[in-house]
Length: 195
Image (cartoon, rainbow, N blue to C red):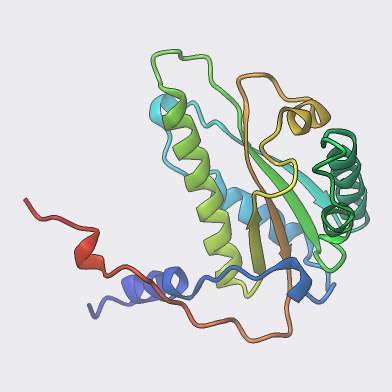
């Protein structure tokens, strides 16, 4: 298509990549830019205007506070036979080179007729909006789901309700490494059926 708006958004969508936090360089992102990304997230589709997406933002020095708490949570809530010091250290240092860490979660709305799945989908769309905005600004991002992200202990640490759902931990920063090329392993024709 020759539409410049389409080409611009196509370039951002196809150019977005996951950049692991260890590849980030420690340079800080201005808080104002992160606020702008959150404003993009806020334009996700939402059924019944429940707007279930929520973000807890840890900036600069607070990133290490979160990572330390996450590691301690892992240590306190992992069976000693399954505990690995490597995983503890990885969680503790995950944000060493990140500028911001955002915990993204779905806050269940008060309209029981709207299925929880739709609230999770809306929150995922908000996260994607944020990640695409970051890519457009040259900000590296990583949507993490490891460690304690999906465990009840994380919800307790964050003061979330039983019906709320953590969807991931987002690490934002800059990188000096070139962004990797993208790929898809399953051809589009195998994913689409025209009826």
